[in-house]
Length: 327
Image (tube, rainbow, N blue to C red):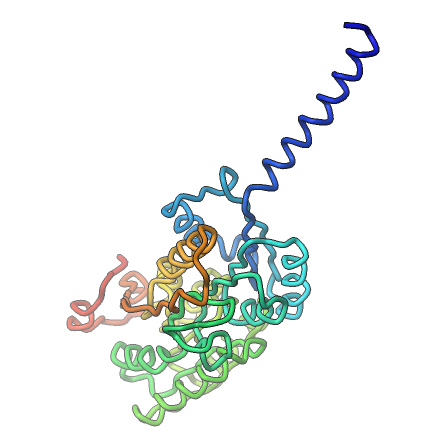
């Protein structure tokens, strides 16, 4: 082979190999992951999504890629992040929470969206109905705001002497905050308790919120559903211990971080099911044909170590009702 011909063949191969590599890489489906929080604060839930994907045959980096977009506590960034995923032409968008889902819905009517939310997806306009979502979105809902009244009941059973209870809400997420406030106030009327609504949407706000509830004489605290509070669970748990405040949330992880109790659905299982739905869509199913799944199992978790630190005697019947007791 002549030298010039050899160089041409070699040059053609140099072009062909990267082109083949790019073709193979582009053939790998890409999932967009849209979240209000940070990678550290949402690591458990993100891991649950990957678990659901792997159970259905998709492993990140092997046969599926995930583009993560984190708003880092700033919901005003979500529309731009959602638009970026649409420009990226991802195959599916996983939206973690109501604000990310609303941003994704506003950004696209064609790319499938799989959400996990604590609010009513029908009332929020995310789907036409639970059984027949229609459109391009489906997912999992735990209807977390409806749990607030039950959480206050459990907290009152644990600390019957606490007649003043504070409810912590995130004002930047009204889709969760407003119904949670209504649930808390309804529980107050039913149980004859005074409910103080306290707002927090930043790390500094949380410190100030505990100072406020102490000033108001609140004897207990319900942390209302919000992903921001999940991401700040260690701070909230430490402050609850420092100020000797019995507190309840809907996530087991906060009870493990030092809160007295949690009552709610398994969030990790919800996000695992989100991963499964995303995988099924990658395999060709349509979101309009996949019913919105609802949490069916609700766990009561009691942290006995925290109870001892707070000087509380946990009623035996509550220990019997608990799905898990942390010692």
